[in-house]
Image 1 (cartoon, helix red, strand yellow):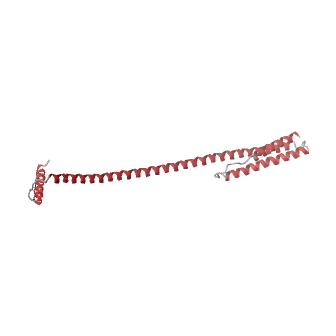
Image 2 (cartoon, one colour):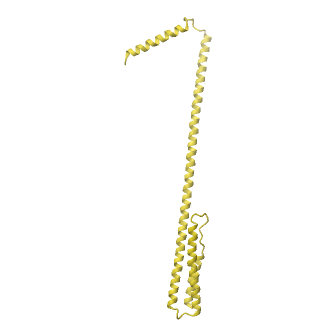
Image 3 (spheres, one colour):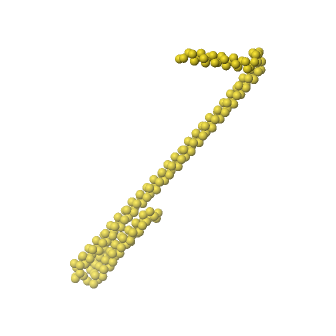
Length: 194
């Protein structure tokens, strides 16, 4: 440590004290006790005011910090709610897409079955065309009409389902293709019995 700087600082403090005494005037008698009490009360009042101001500043800073935290929490809560809503919507769309895929698969199966049934009945009719009676031919023709109608309604229903992928209404192709297919197969089978 540098002692010369320390001595210079002590000399400066002594010089400052002497200068302060000169401005005060001659050393007077100590102040009366009431004056000492009033000075200590004034000092305490000043300290109380400073303490009050500091307390209000600290309270204001804490309130601002709590308000900022509350606003941040509200923003995070809103973001979480928005993300949850988006996830729910994505889940609904995915379930909707799966429902549409299942319905399209069902309709393709019905259409394929109707086509295979029609081809099989045409092939069966070609083999037994000479031995078939007029009633069997008429019933076979009715079966063909029903099978072709089942094929057509299955294709039409596929188009409607594809158009309504994101529509809020329920996906319903109806049971018309299924019932036409069943009726066509039944009538075709009856024609083989005639």
